[in-house]
Amino acid sequence: MVFAVSATEAFEAALVIVALIPKSYFSALSGTLIAGGSVVALTIALKDQIAKIRLPHLKFVLSSLLFSLGTMLGIEIFMDMSELFLLALFVAWLGINYVLIKV
Image (cartoon, rainbow, N blue to C red; front, side, top):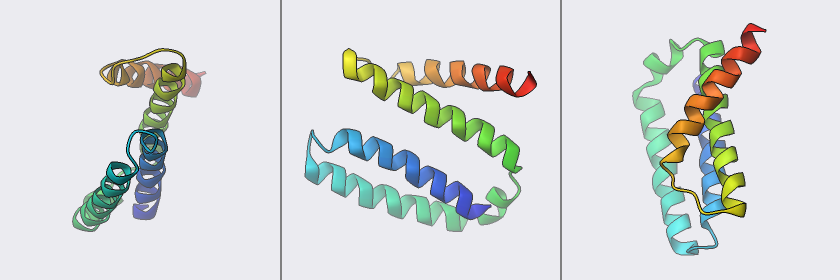
């Protein structure tokens, strides 16, 4: 369970890093190292709490996060978009996932 959380967070971070590399290789690399260390440290520190998360709920929320990030990056290909819209996309994907699960 803890590995699933860490692996999902690492995948999400990798998507962001790939998008940031053209702006500055050094900042993308240093951000990767800081984020990686932070995820490992937080996973170790919160292991017991993370183990209590039920897997279906985790998949529901994390898939919404990944879909919203992917949607935002896809939209940014065609037009400039503020990162503030990520929250709106997340809420929209939560709703879409909820409807898909209940149908």
